[in-house]
Length: 131
Length: 152
Image (cartoon, each protein chain N blue to C red):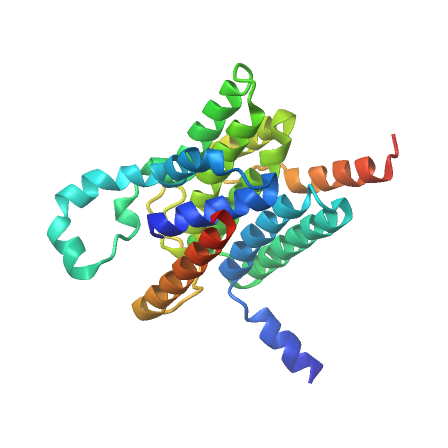
């Protein structure tokens, strides 16, 4: 039973998951001014959904250029939404990340910065007032 | 997605993020649909087929509608933010534009890496033209009603 459920879960088209990260990024923007903890949770959810989409792409769509492009584009769009309220310096890093994506797109290895992960750590540190 | 949805949805999201700002409606109206100006040359050139099939497709979008344009616009606004001190207006403009990119990416066909690659990307949230029409109509009506209730 559980195996069947998991199997169904694995059949999700990764592009749909990447699209979902845009919706959760939008939810993050809406919640960040009202509830920090909820926003952090939504950002974590965004990263996890994106990671799951990445693993599905690696497993089933290794040679599919369209799915790879969807992953890259949705990641950049998600960052563009998330960092709107944190213009300086995060938007600068986002622009660098976009340029890196465009520059390395046709190369053997695509290089991008895990900005959302770094931003999550920053938010958690800020929330817990660790420093 | 149509201009009416872009505008009303942008206003709803901006109201949820920054609070009700009726004085910003002209700015939101312009910047939420400004990206679609790149369709104009295509519309003029293919007017008859557009009327017949009512479908734009990814070929109607120039590179300004893709990641290339996203970088150029983001860089410009980020640069302007060092001189223009009204951060709220800049953030509203940026949110309008980014929402436009996100909505178009979610709903339609796009070529995100144009001009480096012409490969199309589609998220498969619907499977036929009829479903797309239904989705677009439902979302537009819902967004316009929500906008109307918020403003009036």
